[in-house]
Amino acid sequence: MNRKKMITLIITWSIFVGCVVCINFLPIGVAKSLNNHTITGDGIKIYYDLFAPKGDSSLKNGIILGHGVMVNKQFMRSIALDLAQNGFVVAAFDFRGHGRSGGTLLRENITLDILAIKNIFALRGDINMSNLGYLGYSMGGGAGYQLLSSDPDFRAMVSLASSGSSPQDPPNLLILQGKIDEVVEYDHVLQYISNRTGIATENIEPGITYGSISDGNATKLILSNTDHLLAPYSRNNILETRKWFLQTLENENNSPTEMTSHTLLILFVVIGTCSGIVAFIFSAEFIIKKLSTQKSDYEDISALVEKIDRNELRKKVLRRYWYTVLPLSIPCVIVGALSLVLPIFYTSLIIILLSGSAAASTFYLWYLLKKEGIRFERFLKNEFRRTSIVNIAIGIGLGLALYAVLGLTIGYIFGIVPGISKWGWAALYWIFMFLIMFTNTLFFRTVYGTPNTTFSGKFKELGLVTAMNFVPITIIILISVGIFRSWFNIQFLIPIFPQIILINAVAIKIYSVNKDVVLSSLVNSVMLTIFTIALSFL
Image (cartoon, rainbow, N blue to C red; front, side, top):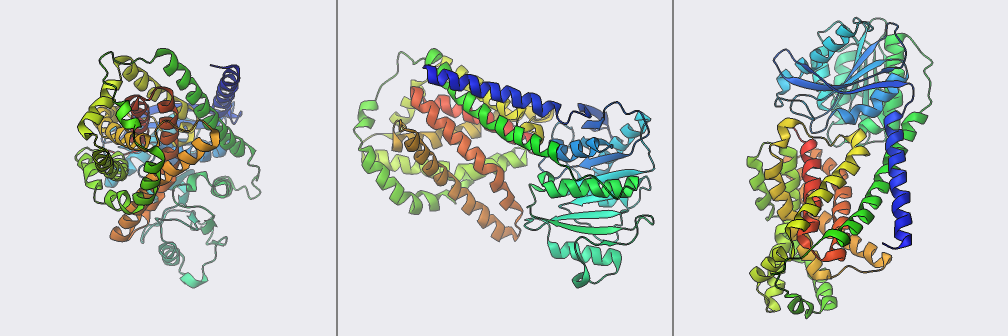
């Protein structure tokens, strides 16, 4: 490793470590107790995080945060930290079947999960149990509407990217609706408010409080410039949540508007994630150069492959990809649909979305090689013979390392640590992920050859490969929107896009070091498998 790369490595790792430290210690005045667990009335283990003001033994008001489907308690962390900084004891928990919690998702029983956390509050002894608050995001909001309509211990509720239905009537309700929410229809929200308040839908104005807080029937609607998935991270939603709970639970009408801690947290997460990825890529290059090997019985057919005119092949693929591989990607999702026999739905969904273009690219690669007189089976065997046991170990190790980098940064507010019940399925999902990563990398590396050595060349290649991966996924999701007449699936494009950029960047870099497709595919498949099963529900 040259001096310039060594300096870059030291700087990026230093920034990464510094950001991780800051992420875990901010805000300074909040005490955190993470990954505790309790048991529900029907015997399900539920994991929760507690946040409270440091050094405050006085009687306080407690707030419970319930997340949405296919996410977890870390999604609520920005809101939890802000509320704790403003004097509340806050519990964010994983609903059954989500995150680290046990059980499977049964919506009719998830109110029991909220009650289990309520019991934790009662055991503390420093919480006013007749003046509780609840915030429910998406699915968590639905559970809140149901429970709070009949539980008098709760004094206020925030409905985040969610909506109730009559006759559900929780006390002192703030509804936070995104202007571009793909899931919750604004007309449905207005109709619910109309049924609750008796005001015609056309006369309901955002920002106006209808009813009385003292009587427990206050209702307020706030519109924010956000979508459904990112609603818990919206600066405006966090501020409005703080104001509402201070007003309804503590009679505080002049709540602070300072958001420095939230801004710093997001800043450290973004910088830490980016610096960690850069540091990982440079470290991976160094490790692979030092430790990777090649089998002695490896049959080198590179001479045959190198006879292919890569410039002509690239031009041909760029012209034909959009009317050959792209349309073929749609029916090819049936390959990934086999994963639906496994129980973790979101991971199966990601596999389906990725498998379409991977399978189509494989068929197209077979066609291209056949025209060049190269047998596809021989070509495929050659790639597996190129690797070694050492390289396989390196690939798995680097995949775990990349996952750790993401887990220590973006994972703090996004949640990518699977529960024990999900780890047992990881190996089966990994098989699907590895085959997708392998065929995807094999196709693009055959077309492009050794990655461009210049930064601009690598950047251009990364952009093209990402587009070729992302466009088929977008089309498949849009088709699902038309079939199901719901925009729910469109939100998956938000986390998928950066993941595609990352896996392609890793594949390009690692392949440029030792041309081992198996090694780079192992890195990406290990990371992506753990990442996705953590965000799925059972």
